[in-house]
Length: 246
Image (cartoon, rainbow, N blue to C red):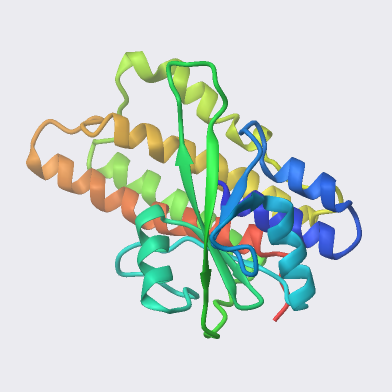
């Protein structure tokens, strides 16, 4: 996900904890330098992501991450073009009347770094999606416990042997967070747990059978994982938006 680090490093820049160059460089992670298309007043030119951070800062508002999925678009402002693009990518960042959606281009198996173009949209004011770090932490902890119980009860909690090493790596996903200095400690802890669980969910998608042996087992496994996926998504929203102001 690219939207979370962009929002977090933008907040650190707005608060004066990092410079513009630090925020622009760090938010790109291991990608090639990010660029932005359609940003006023530069459109139709493609500009460095630092221009987006300056644009947001001049607007005087914080930015927010949204991670919409079909059936749950809480906090996602209009117009329709932005909503559609955000839904297609499953993520976006917006603030001060401007929203951006990442277009990610990988070059595997080449060693060339991934490139990211943020598509810019004028966005409308909309209701803020209030989700606190504390509430998201509670919901995530509950979902982990209940999903594990449901998987065990349905006897579909297994993994194939060839996923043992990837599963071990997934459990360390929280160590690879891209967050600025001074980010709220409770949000860091929440995001670390959410990233670990997201990595596990990604593996579950790669191993759709798990311990299931029939259609009923598959349905039970999907039903057990669905609330966990929602809780992980909400935890990521709460964590990355921890410094956003209304």
